[in-house]
Picture (cartoon, rainbow, N blue to C red):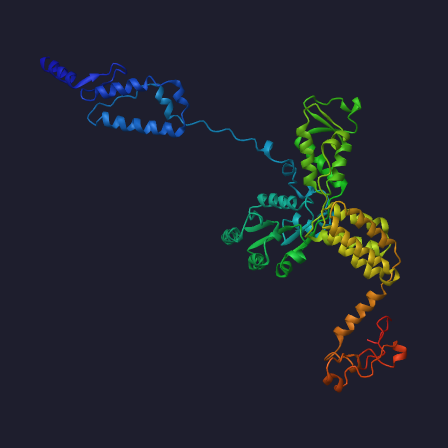
Length: 523
């Protein structure tokens, strides 16, 4: 008994209980432990709002202190139940963002299946070759060419859904406005690896015309050997913006501008799919509003049709305008046609001053003048100006029309067209618009004669088809400023009389009887 008592007294000399947590520690470390224990049990609640990095630093510091104050020889004790234990709990997971609220309506309304595509009946309608290939999940190399908002990216979205459903296809989407050659090379590198596992890579390159001709060469070899299936989308004429070598490897699919009925169907489908509003024929008729929930907006069908009419065939513009109108209205608001017209104006006119539409509209103006269609000539002139066309370019085309199509039938037409060009140079837009309109109508109503133009075309053709060297100028038609030239025969026999009285010929030798003003000019 005496020996046990001695051991207990010896143990009590070496270990001292902590007055806070009631744990025993060695005498030389008990002071440090008590200070630490008091600190941890008196942390204010506000410190629980510290950042995760501060918490991690505190925990690591706490571990270091414990290692220092609790040597291996000390007895193993349980961790005290204190407020600092909350530091070791994992941080709460952040709530997932509601992407639906931030995603534009035009993106949410994209079709997922080929049957959901609205419009483009000629290219992807029932019975077409491309429709049959896509239904069999066979995707050809193709270039989708069409105006903005006609459904090029939506079709790519349908193909992406097809690839997700298939185990041997993968879909990659890039945009030439953001991606470069290195991105394409990376896609090809992965595609080669996937091909070993019999997986085909479909690459959708949006705005492919943004790549220059040298950058487009990157696709050639990989499209030809089947490493990738290329789907390009462009608003520019592929004949001008894409390599001929690339065009020979891809089929060009012409996608037409959407009609008003197509846009109306797209808007109605987007509203129904996303449960955005209730469509009625007349918001003023209470019978149409029966059963409508108070938490929903009500919109007239005429309003949707008006959006389809003013969007210029661009479904993206129509969906954006619809989304703007619905966000501005608070349920249970009633959106009438008049309210929509007051809030949203025609935002744009489809026109590209450097693209094909630039040439199409001015060509239509010129042909209308040639045909004497004054209203059409005025319309296309105004359409070009509304799209932001350079008025001087329009004026130059009017000068050309005056010489080419009116010619000698009304010699004053050319004078007035040149005066119009000079007036546009002097006063500019918007004041010069009436000058262009007057000149276009004037030329359309003027008598027409293409005699000079056709004669010039025959003459140019005759010169280009002449075999051998072109005949020299007859000596009597040459000037003779020096004695040597006169001695050689330059200007010999020349006189100022009319050709019928002068006795001279004015065409080269052997071409005396050629008359370019006749259909059979002897060429």
